[in-house]
Length: 125
Length: 404
Image 1: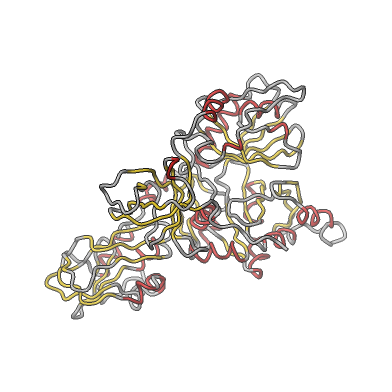
Image 2: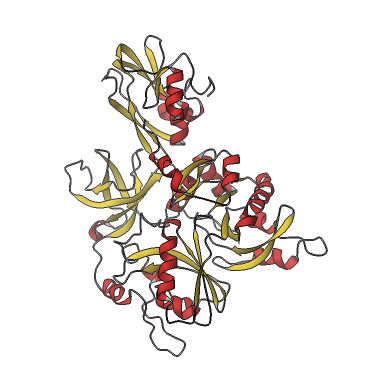
């Protein structure tokens, strides 16, 4: 597994989301998730101001072939959503860790998060 | 996010003779009909668009092939299938179905009449063994031999507006080192739903192929039946010859969105053992009046039930739905009255649904009650708890531009 697939500065969930350590924290889905879904065509994200709880379903990511629920990796308040990704979800496939971010959260607490190494091991199973 | 549970089936699946090619191309594999097959190579959308605009190359080696030969082959198929196969001209093909005694659909098939006494029956992967078994049983008492050719046969499809140019370019050079004029002409002049043996070039040698102008994408295209050991060489040759014209390898995901846009049924979705051809809008394939050469009526398996079924109004009919929102309906979702949410009465069920890459909006096929099947009827689909508005539209959703 290369660092490009699972950047080491991010933390991960077993449901294939990532969250960074900034304030507010940025949340997205992993390259593995984007690859498994195929071309993403529709994102449903929480609204700005929404309270989200770690481990709860807060949206959905839909591709040409399938749809997956989106789980929040942290507990807190949504302060921004990536409107560019909502308008053109292809960016989530092409750049899942940067331009393809999904939303930002003012974090109150985090859930059970995995390191890049732990997530890579989980994906490799 | 959740991962794909289909990966768990991988250990029990059969592998295509082109499996190594798919792995080398970096294909994302999936379990389909008991086989490991490419879901996509790079991007579903790019592969879909390549087929609409240039060409796509598909491995269909999971499909079943059953040969029926002998003086009684045509009569055996007239008895076994709902179509009138003895009326098919040699060199032509027919879309037909294998039905049970109760009229329900066991599989939908393409049958090629290769010669007066020789037919090739092409079945869906998941039904291939059943079709072979049923044909053997139903041919009992006829002068016909039924042989399962599935394992020995590979099937490669070249689909899209550039397909004719690509396949004609594969015709093997003759003795004078120029492509045999007749072979090229056979390909270029071949009619839709026709087939002929053609020698194609594949790597460092020739391959004897059955070339058919059939497909499942809504585009012009060809299907190439070849012996399994020669499939990889032909696959690579088509890829090399086609890439400069825009051909890309395409997976099952693109195949599904292409056939859905073209309004073509997929067994297990629009067709199954609870459905007769009439509900699916395919009653035309049922030849209740088929007769022998001497004019005597021919009975066939399922005839009585299908005759009764045609005479009575259907409880549900297959329609096309255009999504007015962004969230596509998916197979199994409930069709409800417009504006209705979870509480609204269910009036139908979605059989296939996806965002249409060619049209840019969600499309779906669904069974609905007949009074709600008229074009323009406003309905809704319960998409995971929220009603998404849809409108009944005619099938197919997409029709290819006519050639000049």
